[in-house]
Length: 272
Ligand SMILES: [Zn+2]
Image 1 (cartoon, rainbow, N blue to C red):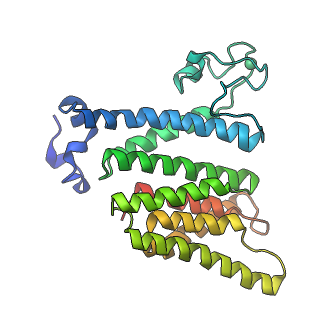
Image 2: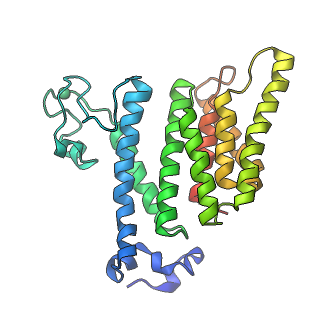
Image 3: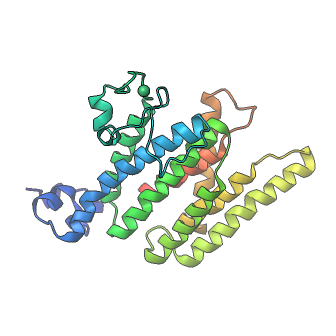
């Protein structure tokens, strides 16, 4: 039995969403959507893992959505049971069933990360529809974060999708931002970094900020609104500087996109 006075203060008003209560007392259709969120999260994590390994690390052109996955080494098509996230990795002890080559551990790490993130989302004051949008947004932001970190590249389509889902989110809920602030944020975020880069170019005759960064900053502010302009920029640049420091690349090109994406995720999981 969950004691109400044992819940942190931010749960008051949302007690019905406590996962333990939801398993024990409330199995209505909507609560089943809640229970399915972590399952969807793990499947999404499995897709992000495949996207990371095949599209970002190996730069493979193969279709990863409609074509059955294969082992990267022996090229054998994976059986259905080998595609079950987390469980298959543990059962196979991290090796291909046919050729025993090592399956990259990132798959398992990303799937577990998505499971934890989906559980975290269940505690936010969102309805089922909004919770799924937030999870997809985090998936897109993680793809951008990894891609900018590893390859210094951002996907334009992913940033456009983030902006569209962000605007959509501000229409259905005001927990992150309102529609007008969200649209103003998107335009202001893009223009600010664009102009900053133009000024930098005037003096240094080279680009200081990549065009992917303008788009991604606009997109993250489409989620969080113009009111988060300062905090987003502060957290994103701190994260980017931190990465630059730890990877000893402070004087080279630093992944601002990774900082922006991580800041976007932090504010999605901790709405103010
Ligand atoms: Zn194999």
